[in-house]
Length: 131
Image (cartoon, rainbow, N blue to C red; front, side):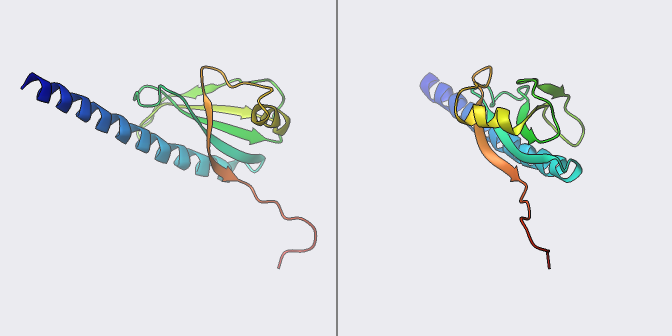
């Protein structure tokens, strides 16, 4: 009987962790959409993941590639949770060059963070007139 209770508790915790991770993914997309609309200099936005993401207090982390920022390395900016954004969030804004260095692995992300899925990519028009 104790085994059933322990197994049930582990299963319930795994479900809660999965739900938090799913909710954080939706929050990341919501933030990326909002940021891309108000900041035309943002070229790409990625979700940064880590082993701690299942914890509610762990921030939703976005990596924003911007042509209007300066090269300053990985400088996270932390925001508190709000009534409309349930989780704290962290934004890291980098230049396109710094992003190439991260992708080529010549520059590492801190704290065991991993480059997750692409949440936004600005499509630039090339040549000619739009119709």
